[in-house]
Image 1: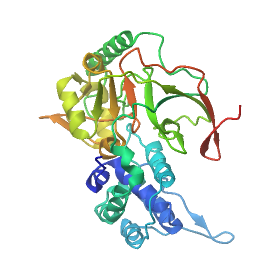
Image 2 (image 1 turned 180 degrees about the vertical axis):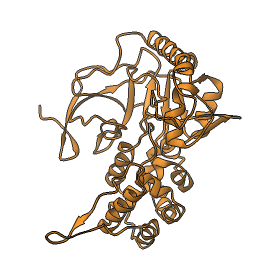
Image 3 (image 1 turned 90 degrees about the vertical axis):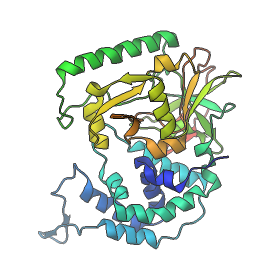
Length: 356
């Protein structure tokens, strides 16, 4: 089985953030230093934060530099990686992803040359662990689960073909209006629809993880603070045509084969998150559905590429945004959640099956 490489982990915003979260899980001084140094680099930081020492006396917090964080990383002892620790660090790296504004301070910290270099040892340690083999694995056809939150429904009552046709018409109309209604300057303070995943009311699933339940309970971008969920096992039809997005090259190829222009509607958000100026496309999911029954984004591809500007053609790029690691979107009506499902509750930051 192919495994994630250290280079892939170090190449992406989410991969580097995972490494930082994982390293901090073993060392409280390092975790505190990362928080302080990340605050210094955060574009929205509050510069008035101070600490108080005694009555009536205040002094500024001592600054923690990237070099200091790198020094702590270099001396860190790395124990064997277990799946629980890896999943917790991955969940944290996923939860703080944002594609509608600049990367936060800790993402920026992990991208500084000195910290990135110090993370190379951590990346090699993680990539060599059997606990992350599933990150590069194709769709787990016998073990797929859909998650619904707080009584919400996941799938639309419309057919997939109808929903994709509506989605495409909405994207084309938004692009047309954005060309005249929105500023052409990518640095202008404007935000719109920043995601590039298929419509969220299509069935979407993730694998189960032994001892931890369905991965979709924990690996959630931009979550809404849900505390209750229901999961349903989803049967994958024999012979289902699943497109594996296993890296940025696969996403670029998909965009080249089925491009949908979104430059005017995405330019502000995607400039903020990538710093790139130019044309943007995303996959035309209505066209993709004519050739594939599902699209699976591996966790390895997510860590290497989510939130980055992925070159597609000369002057054209795309962004993987709003799509969770290991998530599969289904482009056929035959795959929908069935049965009553399993109820889960959030208990002390961990999901546990609800008592019946």
